[in-house]
Amino acid sequence: MKFGVSTFITDQGIAPDALGRAVEERGFDSLLIAEHTHIPVERRSPYPGGGDLPEMYYRTLDPFVALSAAASVTERLLLGTGIALVAQRDPIITAKEVASLDLVSGGRAIFGIGVGWNREEMENHGTDPSTRGRLVNERLRAIRELWTAEKAEFHGEFVDFDPVYAWPKPVRRPHPPIWIGGGEGAFPRIAEIGDAWLANRTPPEDLGPQIERMRQVAGRDVPVTLYAAPDDPAAIEAYERVGVERLLLYLPTRPENETLAQLDRLAAVAGLG
Image (cartoon, rainbow, N blue to C red; front, side, top):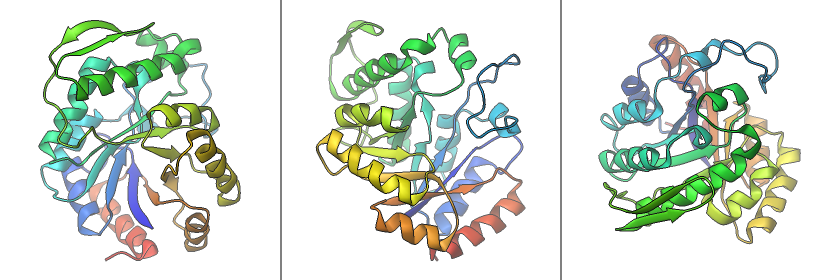
């Protein structure tokens, strides 16, 4: 099994370059970071984790700026979004950002995406929450076209542009892997566009049957990465048994010294080093 780290990078925690270096030095293969452009003061959308929304959600750095800083001090570490909120992103700009990260990192970008839960945040970006699934699907198709075609063109319900030149193209061919986040509602999206399922933290006894259903919908053996995995050896073994390829162990957002100590503990649990 492979092990990575999932976390929020904020202005109050460890810096992204120090974090990237530390994650790679301890033998993890990947670093995925969360995204929120802002949090509306008046919010009706309940936090999926229950209770008050943690402060880290309010303070996330731009993921592509942060990951580029981590790329500059690492050589092997996969660098990804976990997740990028495509419903809130311009597809032409996003295609350029991901391709630029892939270029400056030497082909190490991972495009982890999701639809999102914060309806008020989406609405501030001009997105209708009721159509966000269809919107995300179209934007992903358009992004893939921008990455792979010399003269990219797209005409859809939400995304519409005549032929354009768009560089840089990604280093990875045909394009950086697209990891689709979400639950069973994301399975058709995985079937059409996804290179992997970025599953939410789910008990292994429930995740196993979900993986089987996902692969039936996709019609192929789609790899599974689990986001915010628990740092429990028994759970790690159970996830491996049900077919999870990679666990992203959750790293709380803390100052550098506390973060390094926590990374040491997570690496020991994963048997790295």
